[in-house]
Image 1 (tube, rainbow, N blue to C red):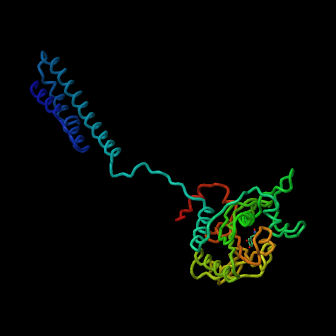
Image 2 (tube, rainbow, N blue to C red; image 1 turned 180 degrees about the vertical axis):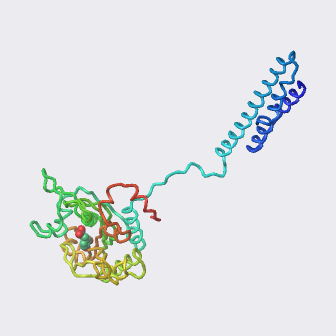
Image 3 (cartoon, rainbow, N blue to C red; image 1 turned 90 degrees about the vertical axis):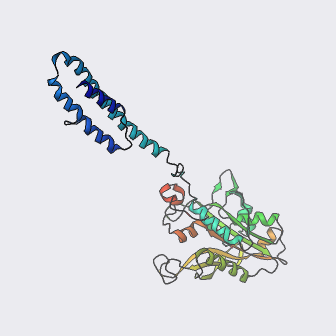
Length: 339
Ligand code: DAH
C-alpha cells in the first residue's frame, strides 16, 4: 500500500498538461469517485492497525497533492490562454476613434475645391464689421428698403458696428485692397436676427465668389456656375437663371438647379417644380466697383453668393437646420467623406 501511494505521488508530481481537456482527464483518473486515490481510500480499511496512522497521513498527503496539482495545472492553462490573448501580435493596435469633419466643413471644402480648379483663391474677412463694408459700399443706400432684406444684428452702443449679414462684405474688403484681376472665394459665418426654427437660424454660413477683370461677361458667370453645379451635384445637373434683384449686382439673378432628388421630374422636395434654388449672383454693379476704387470703365466682374447649409441640405437632405449647431455626435458621425 505504502509503495503504491508513493508511486502515485511521484506520478502526480510529474504530471503535466497542455490542454484543458487533459487536465480534466487527469482529475477523473485520480480524484473521481472511482479514481485511483478513492480506490486507495477504500482499501484503507484493510490496512493493519499499527500502520493506519502512517498510511492515513500518506493518503491524505496524496489526495491534497493531487488536488493542488490539478488546480495548478488548470490555473496555469487559463493564465496561458489569457496571456496569448493579451499578446496577440496580429491584433490591430488600440482602436483610435477618428473624429469626423462637420458636414458644413465637408461641403465648404468641396465648394472651395471645385472653384479652386478654375483658378479661385480664398480670402476671409471679419465677422464683426462696419456698416460701410456690409451695406454702404455694396450700394445699399441709407434707408434703402433693401437693407430690410437682411435682419441685421446691430450693436446698441454703436450702430455703425454690425455682425455681417452676408459674406459679400469680404468683396468690399478685397476690392479696396487689391487690384484686378481678382478671382476669389470668401467662405464664412454670417448672422441674421431670425427666430430659430428648423428652417432658419441666427447664424449660418455662406461662400461668396468674386471675379473682376477686363471684359468679364455674364456668359463667364454662367459658365463658372454651370461647372460648379455639375461638379457638385453630378454631370446631368442642369441650371437655370431667373432675373432677380440685389443692390450690389446689375443685372442680378438667382440660380436654380434641376432637383437632384428627382432629376427634375418633380417631387415633394422641389415642390413638384423640378427645380431648387441654390444661389444669388450677378454682374458687380459699377457703383460698387467705384466705391471700392476700381475703375468701372476698365473693369467688370461677376459675383455670386450661396448658403452652405442650403447646399448641404441638397446633398445630404438634412431636414432641420438646427442639427448643424447642436453637436449631436450621432448626427455628426454619419458624415464621412473625402474632404
Ligand atoms: N449676399 C446675398 C445674400 O446674402 C447673396 C448674393 C447674391 C451674393 C448675389 C452675391 C450676389 O455676390 O451677386 O443673400
